[in-house]
Image 1 (tube, one colour):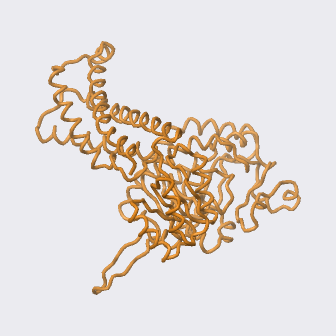
Image 2 (image 1 turned 90 degrees about the vertical axis):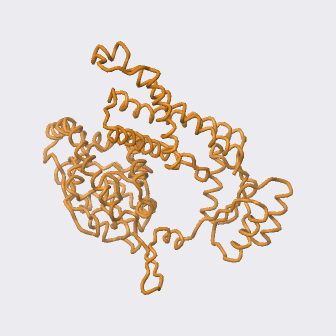
Image 3 (image 1 turned 90 degrees about the horizontal axis):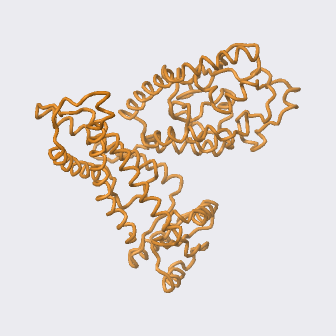
Length: 468
């Protein structure tokens, strides 16, 4: 690991400590400010010296919780959303610890406001502190300071995409020393490069041959270089496995998704709470949309039809009507099909039914589709358990009927209002790319990934869709 990475990781410990202290002090002074006292007078006695002593030990204990939560890991390059998720979890665990100590001591802390405000400000301050460090680090990487010197080996499309990515994203912290397209005499080629440059990492892509992989592993061990490789499809699928013991014989069970057991229960609880909150918050907007639809065109407020859910079971899917009355039946009319551009022309194997410049869309429909407000009623489907807040895109029966065998994996879990494919391009994605993204989500599900998708969804909504 580069010294600059170790330095920035080490800086995070005192930085987090300072930010927790600042958050506690801010909460204290906010509570004792004249503005707060006008709203609710202070009727307790909490000297600043006593509070500072308590705050110091709280900050120490929280740093330990941060460490146990993986916030000081030197191995992984955390994504922006990863840090926020871990900070939120760690600070929440810290506040629970405080409540447990208060309960065990059978004493009430003088101010619940200071505790709760301290929790909120700790999340904010620690995150902002880490964001500052991240920005500084990326600036240094962009200037070539502290970057990892990388050798990439491979000559397929994936390798080219990786090379293009690193060359375009200099602030990611990698500098490509050499792109070796042929792995013949690979050790000699690497030794030649090593004489001129210091090599930090080797990334092997393409069809990995066992003997070449062993050769590279031995080379990296000998020369103290990090070795990474891109796994093939089977290796990727075997990430989620259970090892069972049957009469002393080990049996490997290949899991379809990590979303099982208690994880499924937790996701369902989040769906119920999230959908209820969304329905309450958006109810005035839904009433206005319903009124606008009625005034704009003839027909019902809602448009409902079948879509295919988990395990291939159909369910009644409905949203605000954004097209003229009986628009769904028009797709089978030859005259209509001649007037519109059928976007299945993107790929002959694409089972999706999409049209560009669709004349069936109403004036109100254009607005609510562009802003995804037409999908607000889907929260009711989440509440009753037919859908989830996050999941693969639900498709129509005629689309599912044209699925290839490998596409059937999309039906492993409940479909979602939003998902990885939606935030990655919304309806502009070709079907094959949409499938790959949704299958990746299914195979790599986590609460952290759900949070990332939910936070990215509002930004994706404002991107113009090609197929309305």
